[in-house]
Image (tube, rainbow, N blue to C red; front, side):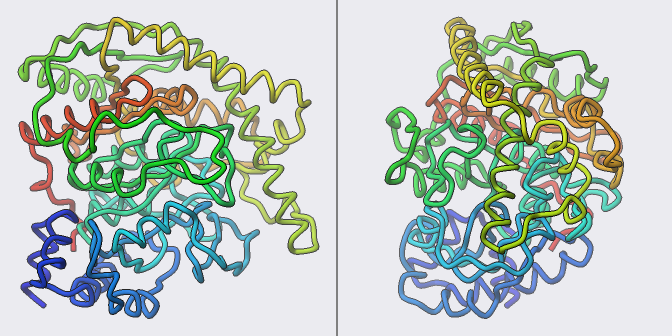
Length: 480
């Protein structure tokens, strides 16, 4: 087992799956070692929603676990609108009780076919509407670099377990920054693909009007590329489809990109970027220049407060619709008292808006996509901080009283993360890359966005940055 532990300490999912296919290690050996690692770190992190170890052991002994590009690699699926057959689906909420899925969502099915073994599910805040993974149902998920700090949200459980080296990657999803925010907080890599690149069905049509997409938190860039190749492509009946891939994504990480024109945006909207976050993004800008890219500072022609108002005109009715469905299925309407304060605030102010306001909000995000497409005629990438400051203390970001206004909620969240939701609205691919740690020893990611459909540009640059300034050798305080 020590040898297997060493493999999990030093290899990414790409390398582990190769060993499985070559017969040098078995899926059950990897799973048993991963289970030990998960149980070693989770008491300090609170990142697991449900353990599915017995079912995982059955999966690991099936022939298909020895095949596929991710053969035998143990992972966990985020407990948020991503059903796994037989697993509990809480969406981070007490409302869901002990409801269990009777099918896999399409992206989970593709991961299963690729050979992954699912050890369980990871924590999420209620309905994924928070930049910290804290909920009444599960409590707080903690940051492995400092357990008094937030792991970010809403894929905080996934990011914490990958950063703690319990597993090489974890599934997540992103509707406003939910892969990139926790990747920044935990010092790992998080990519949000282009709208329509990955499947959201069969239960979700266009989560949050197409702003949401699944993918993963990874330690290595090539794992993210491999996972994207394994899961990309619209599912049957999908309302959106991304442009055809220019090349396999794993091919994009094998060579440095040609010199890129990178626009650096240090601030967006009315909220200031902290000196530490400015240091982080300027450090990354200098590194890009050293690698031969052209960097210039710019401003984005975006009215952020107006955009955020529109975004919550989509999130509010979408949440109301989901809860109405839950009430119908269980035969009893959902009461406010069952919900976390943040959800109550969103529903109170935006849950029952007129249809015309919802339609206007959807039109606004598509207009933004066109606006940013024009901006990227003269630039290849946009570089911003992922967050305006280092990860907050547990309880600081989401300590809401239901009597607060939605404006106060928006200020709390988006003064911390003003950049990420912009690219969910536009549909562009975006990523957080771990290149900077603060004087307090906390990671601060750098955030890049590319043109619609151009994940290969992001992955090529990320791999180049990873080679120039490797991050896998930086280990957090809580580490398996």
